[in-house]
Structure formats: structure tokens, C-alpha cells
Length: 474
Image (cartoon, rainbow, N blue to C red):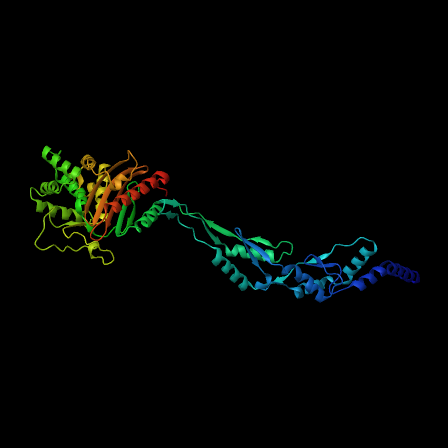
């Protein structure tokens, strides 16, 4: 027993001799946490609680460089009350402050073989509501909706649109918290979702045409129908205008509807004269053909046709060039408007949409479909509609809409004008398929040809160029 005690004393003395210096050094540098414990990966050996708190927080006081695309935005930790939770980290070191780990540390120091440190992960706190508010502010300042293509009126071109950007606030929040809690990397790219730029489509063409029409010194209306898809552009398309000779398109359609078999020589001559020279007397003769020899009956047939074909703002009160003792007062939605008033002819009226639709029906019929065939069945045939278009091609007027088309372009049109109103309705077989363009201008008292003609040509050429360059993008 005595021998055992002696052995223990000798062993204790050896341990004291071996570990004594290490223990003394440990005691001299001992601080708020054991020497073998790291805080957030950093050594805290020998430091007071105050020093540890300062050392832990200092690296995290640097601002975060957050990038929204190419925009650099600084987020200061103080903005979101980011701070290292030193108290929690110190509390987590307590289980590691025990004799066994102390002995392991001292033996490692004595034998010059340091033992592996224990690391307490970084603990932190921040104001989540403040971070969300900061993200919301960034989104408000930098998010942008996709920008539509923009019209350039000076050159009648369309500038492509721009993509949109939206901050993904949930994903960006997680990235920011990671950066705030990483002293070595204070840069983060915010999560941004990109929406593609809108295509240069028919709406973009409509924006360009509208911008140009807004420069017209009066009232302007435009209607475009793209036959392959049925898409339309309508700009003041339901404003009432004097019908003038443009109504001869609808008269021509009804003549073919009531005509049985090929046109005889007399009728062919009448139609040719009307379409070539826009004669009013021959147009009345066509009304007579429609009305069984009675011009007024022909007018009644026309008005019934306008209603049945959906041309609700179009009418004829009398044949051409006939005046009544008291001017008629026929009310339509178009001529009841109070915002735009062209002082339309009380005897004959239409709109850009109505008469444009009439020509569209004729083109569709020539291709074997459309409203005319649906409404009248075998009373009118594609061959007859094509012949009607061929008669329209006799029009000697080469100005207005067709004057703006490139040489060799296939088109037919019917124009009409009185001193204060000029209109033209054209079917054009463009680079991406046929379309109908109907344009009307009004200026009180007198509309100068030098204003209406070049403007129509510009509109027609811009439309042609759009289909030539872009087709009809979905």
C-alpha cells in the first residue's frame, strides 16, 4: 500500500512538473472562454468579455455591397440592427469548460502537440422587419415592368422594347443574411427575375400610327384589319364621317349579291365608270339595279344590308346628289358622340371601322370565306367578289393610301372626299398577307390636300414596312 502511495506521489509530481508550466501559462492568459474554444471560428484566448464582444462585432460592421444587376446598393448592418449575439455564444462555451478538456489541452501544450479546438458557431440577431422594408424600398426604386416598343414619329420607326426586372425578395433576403453573417465576403448579388421585352407586334404598329395621327391638325381615324389572324388596330375608328364615295364599296357588294349570273354589258359599263372615275350618277344607277329599277328602293336595300352586316354607324338617306327640303336627322352611336364631331353629311355617313369592314368582307369572300358568304350563302360567290375587287383596281386615283406603297405592290382602294373630309379605304396584299387599311381625316371648313395626302401615304408606308420587317409576330 505504501509503495502504491509513493508511486502515486511520484506520478503526481511528474505530472506537476510536466503540466505545471503549461497550466501557469494557461492561467496567465485565461479569459472569458477556455483557450481551446473558438468563437465563430476566431480565437478568443485570454480576452475579456468586453474585448470579445468588440472583436466579434467589428468585422460585421462593414456594409454589404448588394448588386441589383449592375446597380451597387449599400446595406449597412446598422440599418437592419445586425449584431453578434455574444451572450448566447459565451453561454454555449460553458459545457466545454471542464477538467477533462483542460487536461487534454495542458497535455497537448506540454507535449507541443496542440489539440483540436472546439468551435462555437456564430450566433447573431437582426431586425427582420427592417430587412424586409429595405428590400421593399430597393424593389420600389429598381424594379421595372417590361417596356413596350416605342414609336419614333420623326422616322416612323419602332424601337424595340426593354425587358422587365423584378426583385425576388424572398431569395434576396436569404442571400443578404448569408452576407451579413460572413465577415470574409461582404458582396452579394440580389436575386432578380427578368421578364422578356414585349415583341414588336401589331399593337406596336398601332402605337406608331396613333402617335403620327396625333400630329394631324384636325380629327383623324384609322382602322386596320389583318386578314390572316383577324387582328385589328382601331384609332378613333367609330367616329362618324361623311360617307362620300367610299360607300360605293358596299354598293358594289350588294350589286353582286342581287345580280344573277355574269354582269351584262350595260351593268359592266356602269360599274367600270363608277369604280374608275367615282361617278355619282353611275353609282345611283347601281342603286337602281339593286332596287329593281328604283334608286330609293336601292337605298332601302343598302340600309338593310348595313344593319345585317353589322355596319351600325353607316347609312344612306338618299341616292347621291339628292337633297331634301329638310335635311334628315338619322341618329347613330357614332354621330351622337360629344367628344369628336366631324359635322358629317346628314345624307350619307360611315366610320373608318364600318367601311373598312365592308372591304375586308369583300377580300375574305374572294378567298372563299368571311361575313358575306356567311350572311348571303350562294347569293354571292368568291368569283364575284374577286371580280368586284378587279373593278376596284380600275380606280385612276394613285395618291392617298396607295401612293405610299412601294412600286409594284398589289392593292385596290376607294377614296372619297368633300371640302372638309378626306377618306380612303384600301385592301393591300402585303409582305405578310392581305390587310385592309381605312383612314379618314376631318378639318373644319377646308382640309388641304397637301396635308391629307402625304399623311395617308406615310401611314400606308409605315404599315407596309412593319409587315415587311416584322411579319406579324405573335
